[in-house]
Length: 184
Ligand SMILES: Cc1cc2nc3c(=O)[nH]c(=O)nc-3n(C[C@H](O)[C@H](O)[C@H](O)COP(=O)(O)O)c2cc1C
Image (cartoon, rainbow, N blue to C red; front, side, top):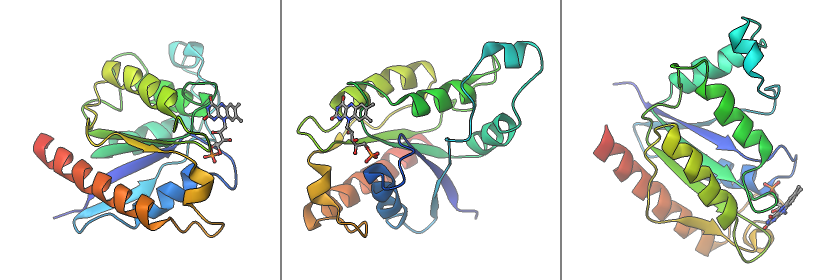
């Protein structure tokens, strides 16, 4: 049987992004039968409804929408920007949600992992993201909630996680797989 494909969406374009380092660690935690892969979102121009209404869709939208449709599940790994979802990630949600009636995200079991160098761990982004995921019909894992505070202390320059964060993420990935299997 084919591996189940889980797309990982990163809410940061920064080269040395902690979110990307977390994503890379999570990819290695994929159990047998699953493939976790990063779906890039930085190439997508800002969504403009005219593109869909007047058949002028930017070149990068079509493969992105196809890639999202082909996924079995989705994991969002994001920092918080001004207490909310970074625009690049919200833009990717919007691009995948249209044209009207062709929501590529529909019904794919999801999870949200957030982090921050501060103490609030991206809570604002985590929960604002969940608000959009309700409308996109992504059933989101409820527990454990994944917040990583003081992320700069949890990951070294080579992307190695502290033992505590690694164990926590492994537990979260296991819970996500159980959530995925319950729904599919
Ligand atoms: C525009 C902007 C807004 C930010 N707003 C917040 C915020 O609301 N809360 C927070 O904890 N950190 C905030 N930060 C700091 C980010 O959490 C920090 O830069 C983090 O490392 C970004 O994630 P990354 O390492 O994956 O790029 C902000 C950073 C930027 C650039």
